[in-house]
Image 1 (tube, rainbow, N blue to C red):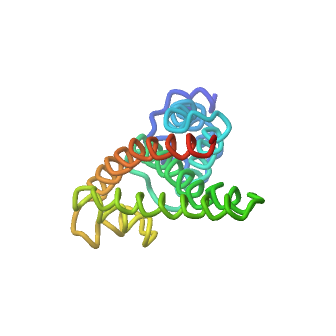
Image 2 (cartoon, rainbow, N blue to C red):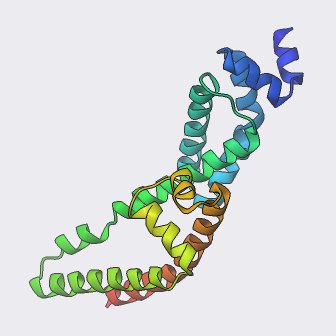
Length: 193
């Protein structure tokens, strides 16, 4: 009987129950929204396992936050959490770039010097590319990825809304992703020779 009432309850009612620590309410929310959150992460990553991990993390956060502070817009909260999980994954992957390992594993000293030089040229080109972004996008991008600030901190410092921060960051990442694909292809062509 309780399951039927939870199944028919809307998200607001389930969140109220979740704030009281209701595991069945959490399960109902999980069953109702998991696939959407998984799809949102998968669309950006194209990696089933990583999308599942991010979706699971989103619901762990929901459980933790739902029992300690109210969530006003569940759909926005879940999608923002999924997007942030994807950004954190990309950031982590960027910090663990395979390029230094490749340079270290090159046995010929001359080839290692060439690879190191290519790596530095790539970093220089990336920094120049970041500098070509529109002013607000560049500032937000650097605050997020160089100063490790979150959207709310950036919004507070710049006097803009967190949504504007996220929109500008998304535009910056899209522009950089397109340009970096060209650099990656050129690097791949050089490394084949």
